[in-house]
Length: 373
Image (cartoon, rainbow, N blue to C red):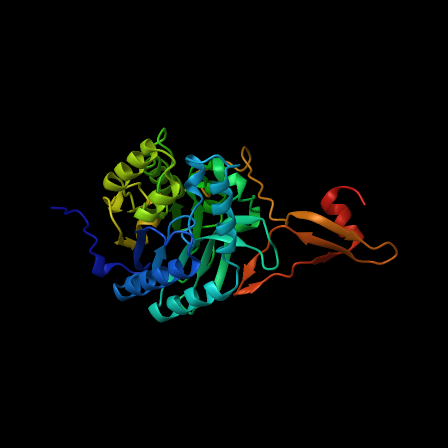
């Protein structure tokens, strides 16, 4: 009599993929205080490392805070402009003193860190970016990206990032990607990262959207779909509201009631698997770190059905082009010399070093890039 073949795990041969402990931070910043928030972030990194986490994700703009006051205050008001000024004065340079502390904490904890920050470029006095920093367990900056399109009030203080930042960073667990808030609903950005092999993804979120748009359903819908479509594990790191944020941001009694109710009822940090299932969470209200174990072999099983960046697509019908050229706002052309200097708005971080502020190109290269000499 024939019996069915049973494949026991101990009998399998071939390559083995790791099971990785992931950590999602749900916490509030020390409002508009870079040093205070950095100290808090380092404590959370060490706590996650002690709990066995290998990758930890932080909320959007965690250091020093995210500019949510534009939901409540006119952009031209004295208070909004004062908070915007403080946001710049507390923003993060990459690399800089803040990243040195974060790198030290990552090295001591032995974890990969994806940190949400408000970024400024060294030597500048105005423009900011909504960014994620990728730090290795050896304490090196291995990547940095900027949100490609600021949303609503963010556009008052943040400018656009470049396509080069969509590249995942390499880890021993496979490519690690990240997107910020509404980017996690951007089908083209999601596909681009899937096509570049992302396995684990960090989605960084603020503490709230607006009274007219609840945030928790948006997190669930967008990132469960992202996990399913890209066949990845997703870390949803979510901000929460503190007393000092309510005091600073509420313009009316109605604003205060909304923020206080949101603080009592919302959370949302979670870890999602490649078939869109919850591995851990979603969390309820309050500060904490959520942990979940990701068996990376589940990605292989999922992709045997749908690998949208591979066998389950039609490159003869669909092609996505990602422009990774640095954005150039200012150019100096020296006639008679064989050099054109291009000052990019954006930069890449590679192995902890910032790219030069000036990129040199020949006239022929410039002609190729712009279509004219």
